[in-house]
Length: 220
Ligand SMILES: [Zn+2]
Image (cartoon, rainbow, N blue to C red; front, side):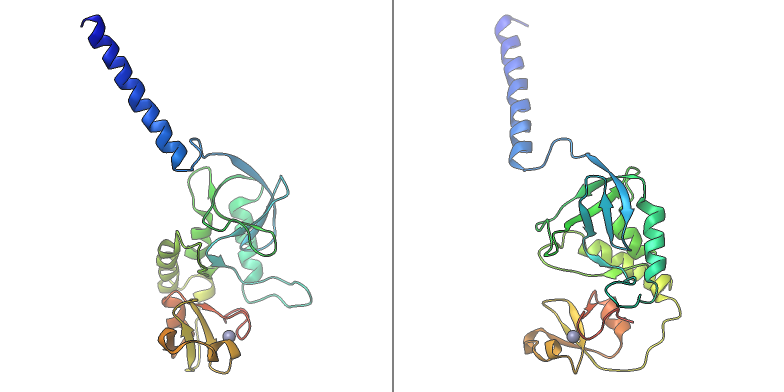
């Protein structure tokens, strides 16, 4: 290899390397996206507090509520909290974000991962401690989470255990992915093109719809 060939090889490598870093930079993602944070508190089945004080709300899922503001705990609320504790309390976690990073309560919205790669949001659903709560624009893992929910439903885990319900009519909203009692004021407002009828809550959950907070707190 003469001097010129050697130089062109070096410059070619330099070019590829620069292109790589430019790509990484433009993609807007940190090169080493592995900052870990210590979980110092578990509030319930879908909310935790980090050592730096940030409150993290898991994206895409909803766990039954525990006692708060004079409202009684929902079925399975404490089981969900307990399980979330066994998963993340006093551990280091990695956070992944979606388009919206905060909710109106100032909580950080995140997908949470353990060191061993376990996807916490997904596991809470998979074990039946939470159900899918899709909310645009944070929909990156919606299909993954819904598949996990269907697995949990089929295996009758957690909130899906001993499922019984009377035949009723519910109105689902294809756009918001919520379902309502037919008496709900929000249910009545659904545009005809977005309206879908469910005869069981089970079917709505299976379709990835979440219960309306106003008319159906808890969903069971
Ligand atoms: Zn409603």
